[in-house]
Length: 310
Image (cartoon, rainbow, N blue to C red; front, side, top):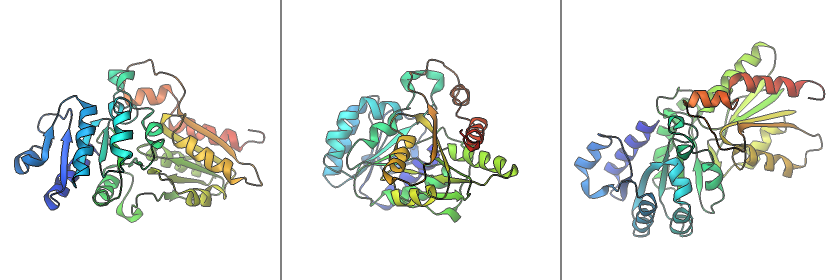
């Protein structure tokens, strides 16, 4: 997904002279072709993230379309004021690429974990927040970012993530994708946990349960009408995300459900990172397991809620 995203930036730059790339801490060799062919539009600014965001805003205000690549934890937390006031307050066409969203940088500890980035970005007016599931979806997203009005936050995953989508599903910023329909329960997810959700749905299907999967790749703006279209059909809704349960996907869906005022109550559960500072080093997968962001817990949660009084 990472490589696909940056390759797309390079392709967009070849087609449109407004495109500028600004990086902070890229690996050796990354985008060398961009740097060689278009050096006047390629900037490597080092670990001065807040300055990079300010630079991008200034370029955007002068007609450029800057794509900036920064570790997601630093982009969301360290640069909050610059993103808020320089980028979003002026509704600039800056593309904020957050590398390593969620628990990707688990080997480096909490300082590098972007587990509140979605919540932070969702609070900012004018901001669009997109979390693709795989490289295929990234490839469908990136051309739409060129002439999109206003800033966009794009959350990148680890890289080498399983491919679970195809061109058949299409892609439109702001429009969720129903990956699977079912009448017994609905899983709502985003990003790379789409695979976990599809796997859980398939397993439960073998047990006779019809479990739908709704992929919310755009967390803001979120299509409330489409969410409600699928939520109203089922008695049980479970959200799963690689993010704190405070302010992320689950919170957004909960608000939509509460404000809908259904005559028949819905059973609802959020799966994600609890309201804690993750205190263990490890791999992304090991922290998923630590916080029960797993297929097994997703299935168990749905089964429990299906029981009378669950």
